[in-house]
View 1 (spheres, rainbow, N blue to C red):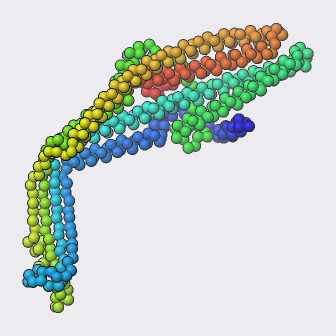
View 2 (cartoon, rainbow, N blue to C red; view 1 turned 90 degrees about the horizontal axis):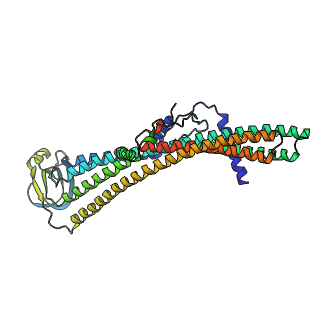
View 3 (tube, rainbow, N blue to C red; view 1 turned 180 degrees about the vertical axis):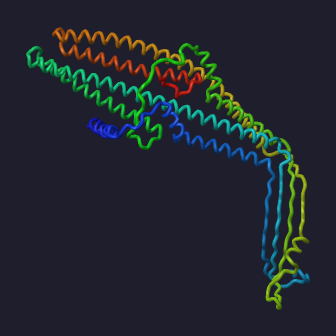
Length: 455
């Protein structure tokens, strides 16, 4: 029952696809470019690049002076000294103070310089990570694209087989009526036609689902009229199979993004150690400060009816101004081993980065040789499937001749047809398996992923 419901739902979507005008058929290059531009994971990684740029601004800011302004105003109610007579009296006094301070690092153990260099490396690493994400998405799109092409061709095979068997059913029906073959043969053919119809439905569902998967990978909202160009070529235009695996590996070491990420992370770890070691050195800071104040007493003036300060505010600001400037030297002597522990911690992280780089190199070598072996195996499998298909076609033609003259029963003839259909499907499967594995090998060799299809 679940299977029937699933097929019904798939048919509804399929009707939705068919009911819309097929206004555009996407190429692989268009799919890759659209995915790179709109994929959510890529957008998220782009934000990491933006964060790295903000961190660089923060590192640059450490070279700039720090400047701060301050202001305060206070009330003192009760017994206070009269700022005019010097006598104590009950009154309310007010005081306003203003100040400005400027400071700048003269020397900080090269920590600011190394922090800036680390920030630059972080931007490079974030760009590499973005590129790696784009490459992964492109590879996934290529795989999904080829899956759609495979399902399209497989559907054609199933539809052609159904058409052949429906014709065979009509002919067998006529032969049964003429008394040339037993009714049991007609029932066998009828069962075969029913099986073929089910195969067509399954192929249609597989094609629909593969289209939906690719559309989802592209982040398409209106996917019902989505389709791809189904013209592809099996040829190895770049002749990648003639290149030795060791040469592909050497080229991959120069261009593969995951290796560049590991190398950049190693450089970042080295800067982290240098920054941590800088905390062992003395720091020298230059500073300058300015301050002044104004004092008020709530003395009532009968003539003006207002409370006024003892002296004009501007005069007080000028009279009470003060400045201070100088240099401050801090020499670390003992801090509970916090600096040393931080250095050791970053040294451990540095060793991990070295191991990670070595592991990426080994993984790359293994992946290249594995990809070459897989591509070679896929090529041999495709060539063998073509030979097998040619043999099945000859066997089918021979069986058709025998069946036509009554020398073969319907069951054996249907078996021959089934073997032919399986051989056709196997050729299609190995074809696209070979294309994808060739593309992975070319990918390691630095050939763009969107050049998989040649016209």
